[in-house]
Amino acid sequence: MERGILYIAKGDEFVQEAIISAQRTKSVMPDCPITLVADHDPTEDCFDRVLLDESPFLKRDKAAAMQRTPYERTLYLDTDIYLEQPVWELFDILDDFDVAIRMAREMAHIPTGGSTTVDGVPPGVPEFNGGVIAYRDTETVMEMLADWASRCLPEHEWDQRTLRPALYHSDVRLCPIQNRYNCMYRFDNKVVGEIKVFHGPLIDRERNSIDTNTAREKLNTTEGFRIHRNYLNTLFVDPPLPLTTKARISVRRFYELFREQGLRETIRRTLQYFSTS
Image 1 (cartoon, rainbow, N blue to C red):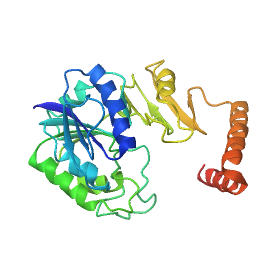
Image 2: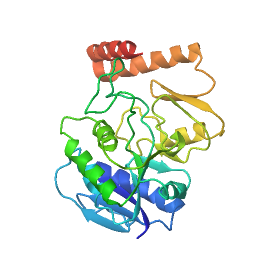
Image 3: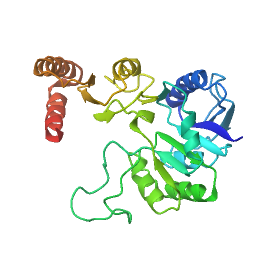
Image 4: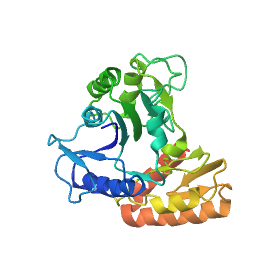
């Protein structure tokens, strides 16, 4: 098959989230086949093909699963992806490039000073977010994915740490995509144009997470340049957050945290918040 969408999910929680995401994807792109790589069969029939991988979850599983794609051109999606509109144009980028992906919101694993290299990559090279990746089934891309998988270690919290050197040391032709094709609305960022892909939990697996429908309603009221901010798990879009609102939300969140986690944990998280602000 020439074009198709790929998910990977292990464990009931993520398989269920993949179902929710795929059902939405199928509704906006009904002619696009969808494949799921999972450790068990899903309970719904929204996938055209299911490839089983019953091994325990490891960070390298994403890169390994991407190598199993049955498509010539694949759009990989994390399970917490919600398509607002069809994104056929991401496949079209692959007419001239091997991989299409957006830069990460922050460069968490890149030194901020000096000229220190990490994994042989100069500090000026950005990180990329692996939640939405369009790629071609070519020898060059498959070699890059194999290298990415080999670099993933159990202690790594995020797989984008190892994606960066895998891309840098490869020969793939890479095209950055706009934020609106992978909008991580839980974090502070900017966006221009209609957001077509929202990236955030579709099931209740993160306490006090911003709801996807809330993000859709707030962020797509305009297509102009806008900044979005997450302040204590409340999404704000231009204009800037008023001080009175900040104070009111802070008091409410502080009380909820104290009631649920106790004084010691409340103090710890409060100090951590201000130390990173």
